[in-house]
Length: 179
Image (tube, rainbow, N blue to C red):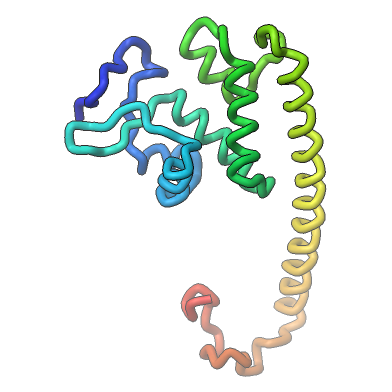
């Protein structure tokens, strides 16, 4: 499928991936990627002659970075600001392949004149991410405890001989009953 823009200079800038493939590669829904596009966080590098969005490896790296931000519950504005800081840190990176890698894992030594300001902004986001990560860890511990209790109930046989309050048929798998 030919792109409507010329992006053929380097494999990492050539827009060859359709949105479904990108979604599979980064483990996100197509809807999430489209939403981020509507919010201005992501822009496909090109469109096919049929109008399909086409993404480059650099686009995929940006989407992957957004995916890392998603569980931290950052606002769209915070995501936009962090993307801007990281893009500033990757400026001056020579090859497109290095830019793709630097977008996800920037090297602060590559930053220009605003390095200390960018580093401060990055540090503030790192602190926020640490706080959000701690909250996620507590949540995961709670969920693990809940799953453990469910497993214990299964081992003890509780609930197997009784009709569930939800009205689901006995022995039905939660997926089968729409849960």
